[in-house]
Amino acid sequence: MRYSVRCLVTAVLLLFSELNYAQDQAAQFNHGKRVVIIMMDGFGMSYFKDAPMPYLKAMIAKGFFKQVNALMPTVTNANNTSICTGTFPEVNGISGNFFLNDKGEEEYMEDKHLVLAPTIFQKLKAYNIKSALVSSKKKSTTLLPEGTDLVLSPETADSAWISKIGKPASIYSAEVNYWSMQAGIYLLKNREDIRCLYIHTTDYPMHTWAPTDSNSINHLANIDNYIHQISEAAPDATILITADHDVNHKSRCVDIQKALLLQNVNIKLALSPEKDKYLKHHRGFGGAAYVYLNSAKDVQQVKSALSKIKGIETILTRAGAAKKYHLPVTRIGDLVVLGDSTTVFGDLESQPEEDLPATYRSHGSVYEIKVPLIILNAVKLPPASYFNYNKDLAAWLMDKKY
Ligand SMILES: [Zn+2]
Image 1 (tube, rainbow, N blue to C red):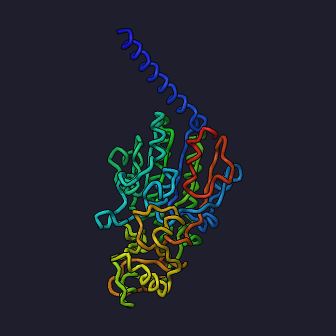
Image 2 (image 1 turned 90 degrees about the horizontal axis):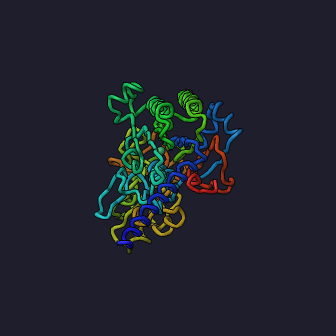
Image 3 (image 1 turned 180 degrees about the horizontal axis):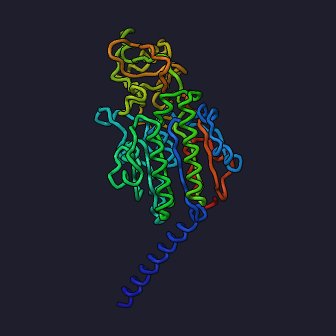
C-alpha cells in the first residue's frame, strides 16, 4: 500500500516537473517574443537585389542578412519542407513535388505522411506553443500542417475567413499573396496566443514577370508594405524571411525520354521533380530530372547517351546525388540530371525538344540556388557562419543557446 502511494506521488511529481519544464520552455522560446516566418516563394537573389523594398532594406541594416543556398532540386516542396523542419531532404524525405513511390507510381508530394522529420510546429507543440500556417498554395497546408493549431489557404478559405479578409483572388495572381499577408496580419492582431506564424506565398508573380518588370516591382513593393504592417501589428515579433529558389528565363525544354529514344536508348521514366498541379506556372518543366532505368545494367549506356543531349550539364548517380545534395536515396531517380542555365526538362507531346517563349520562366537547377536569408528584430542570433542554407532560417530558435 505504502509502496503504491509512493509510486503515485512520484508519478504526480514527474508530471508536474514535465509541465513546469514545458512552461519554462514556452516562456523562454525566442525570449518570449513571437516569430513570423515568411517563406517567399521564388524570391531568389535576382528578385531581392532589384526589389524596391525600402522598409525591408532599412530593417536589414539593423538586422541580419546573408546570401545562402537553397536545396537541390530548387523546387518548392523540397525547400519549403526543409525550411519548416530545419533539415535536409535526406532527413525530411521530400525530394520534390513528384516522386516515384515504392509501387512504381508517380506520386504528388502533398501528404503530411511523406514528411519524415518534425515540423517546427510539432517541436513547439511539445512546449504548448501554438502555431499557424498560412499558405497561398493549398499544397503546403496538406504537406506541412502537423503540429499547427490553425492552417489557412486562400484556395480553401471558408466563409468566416472570407468575411474577415475578403474574397481571395485567383491562385494565378499577385493579389493572392496580399490575401495571405493580410490573413497573417489579422492573426497577429487578434490571436496573440499564436506565437509562431508561418506564411508561404506563391511564386506565380516570379514565373510571370522578370525582376525588372514593373508588375514584379509593384508586387514586391506591396509585399514590403505588408512586412511593414506585420512589424507594426507585432512589434515584439522576430521576422524571418527566406525563399525556396530563384526563378529565371528558360529558352528550351527537353523531353529526356524522347531525346534518348532518338539514340535508341530506353528508360523507364524521366520525371521532373518540379512537375506540379499548378500547371499554369511553368507547365511542369524544371531544371532537374530524375531518370529511372529499366535495369541497373543500363546505367553506363544511359549516362553516355544523356551526356550527348544539349542542355544537360550534370549527370549524377543516385548515390552521388544523394551525397552531394543531401537527398533521400529512395525518393530520387537512378540518375539525377541537371540542366544548364536555359534548359528545362519535362513531358512534351510529340517532339524531343521545344523552344520556349521569351516570357517563359522557371527553376529547378543550380542556377536558381541563391536566395536571401533575413532575420529582423532578434534578441540573440547564432554567428553568420551558422547560416549556410535556407533550411537554417528557423532551426536556431529551438537551440537554448540563442
Ligand atoms: Zn517555389
